[in-house]
Amino acid sequence: MQRGALLDAARALLSEGGTEALSFPALAQRTGLARSSVYEYFRSRAAVVEELCAVDFPVWAAEVESAMAAKELPEEKIEAYVRTQLALVGDRRHRAVVAISAGELDAGARERIRAAHGGLIAMVVEALGELGHQQPRLTAMLLQGVVDAAVRRIELGAAEDPQQITETAVAMALSGVAG
Image 1 (cartoon, rainbow, N blue to C red):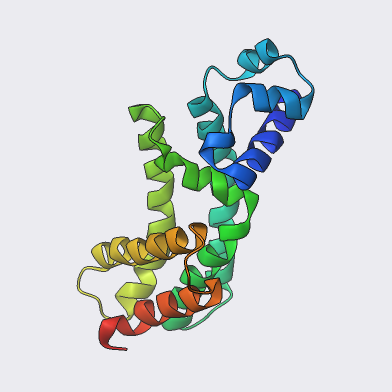
Image 2 (cartoon, helix red, strand yellow):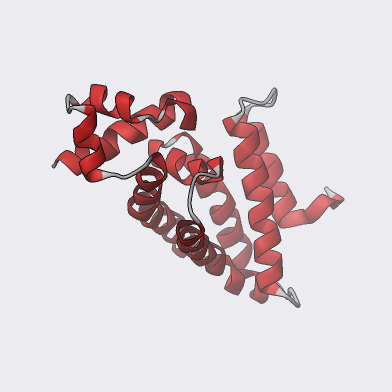
């Protein structure tokens, strides 16, 4: 239960203030634990982020997969892939996934998270193949780059409305830059 409470507190801190807000004193304060008790569960901030990703990423990926499965046409699947990821930007679980860019994770943790991310990309490969892409895996990775860029725009509170960012990302995914 304590580990779950610490993860919930970490999600809240990441949601409210990004990776800078995630500290052991803040986790201790949020959970009512002594700071030394937090170290009994996690050896570092990176360990907290790694566990959040291990717990939250599969749930997030399942939501994307479910949205895609509800569609029939490959174009609809690709649209669901983009829209669902961008809709999850405001979700507290998403903050943990975004937090991996903080650079605090060791190489092993980064590789495990990269592999999980690869599973997300694999979801859209088949739909891209059905559309006739000669290199659907490469196309899927580039498509995820568009999604990642849109996520960053939304996360940064860009001048554009999040809905406008989403519509533009969907249009790029389905029509390319030709408009």
